[in-house]
Amino acid sequence: MNNETQINQGGQINEQVSGTSVLPSGSALMSETWGLYRSKLATLIGVAIVPALVMFLFVNFLNMAPEQGGQGGAMLAGWFSFFILAVLVQIIVYAWGQIAIIEAVSETGEITVAESFGRAKRKIGSYIWLIILSSFFVMGGSLLFIIPGMIFGIWFVFGVYIIVCENEKGFRALLKSREYMRSRTFKVLWRLFVVGFAALIGSVVLNVAFMPFGKEMGASIARLLFAVVVSPFVAAYMYLLFIRLREARGAFVFEPETKTKVAYIGTALLGFILMPAVLLGILFFKFDEIKATITPMNAYEEMSEDEGVIELKP
Image (cartoon, rainbow, N blue to C red; front, side):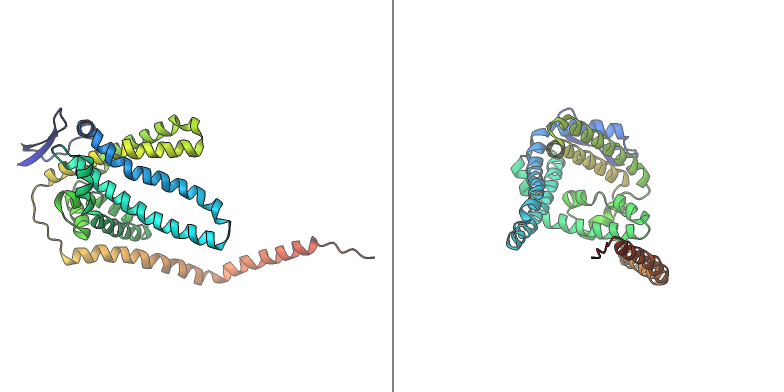
């Protein structure tokens, strides 16, 4: 028997015993998500607005930087240093905000904005490390003919929810996310498509609504509202999908084998090694052809320059 999560009219999460391991449909998840989202709306907006405002300021800073950079080497160095600092602050605040949102939606009772950020503070490092690991595997897999990277990206999507809800960290969180999705990858993928399509519609509506404010300003306002209003809804949907997926999987002892870890690391490393090796091999074996192609082009350019010179004789 598995526990089944349901959202009542007050937005509270109920744990009920169920004899089925079938995942709810995308529309059912959307309906449950709306109940959870509506019950915690004030907290979610309060949490989401902090990283959203930081991102808004950061994007506008980037728009200003090129204009200031032309004033000399010292000014350029100052802007570059400030840029690095701003990027680091943005990463930390974004990570903090993402975890705080998940803390808010995963709390069965009432929770304030301050409590959400307070709980999330201890997990910022774990989240950043998870993103670094996940990026390593996805990028390495993508370099290995794209498909492995896409598969890794889907399998690891619940890693951050495992950090928050189960206190797992790093590689274990990623591998446990994959274990929850075992034999259910395509079912989960369809439900991810549902919320992704809904988020896309929300983004289009916001961009069209604020288009009269101008291209850049309208897009900035749309991004801000998307991060404050739509992103928490997506996080709530993902949380409920994770909970239902965990219930469908049932209890199990999770101890990933060393050979499993080696296989993932080896696949990613192979991508980082193989693709540059292939490119260098092509360059090596096709060097003469490339040189033969470039030489006539250079000769044509030199001839064109010579023809453009007009000598004036007395």
